[in-house]
Image (cartoon, rainbow, N blue to C red):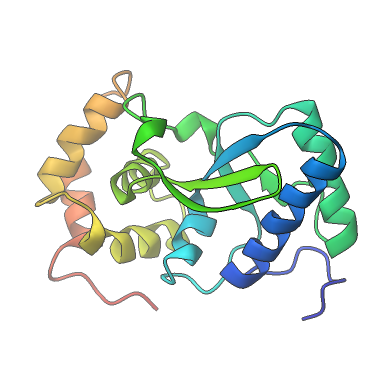
Length: 186
């Protein structure tokens, strides 16, 4: 695929190139330093557990200066205007602590952070495994999480999302997705 194709899948190399360009664009625009926390499919792609994603989800909001820089990068790379977005914000755990993130890289006025695997696992659970990708992501991320059992993850989930109604089937569902007898993702 060429860089001019809109809506194309982005692998981690594509994502990193666009994020580095975003950092340089923020510098060009004198927007000041920014940091973003990568979650969702881009996080999974960074870990080489997914080949590609169509957008880059970040935890937190995107201010007007960042939005302007994102639009400039979209134009340059032939990306959709929302290639970098904050649509994952509703799934950010209440227990999320930005101080636990690791720096993936910094470029220009942009610092790119990665949360602990547990954070993304909880976000995928909160999203309800709404897609086959979410379930494959959970399956792939699970071995690198600190959760010993699905019950441990569900206990952490209810701490992270205190307004969630208890689901008596959540442990069983998660066990089906990440348990030892699960089918291999396709």
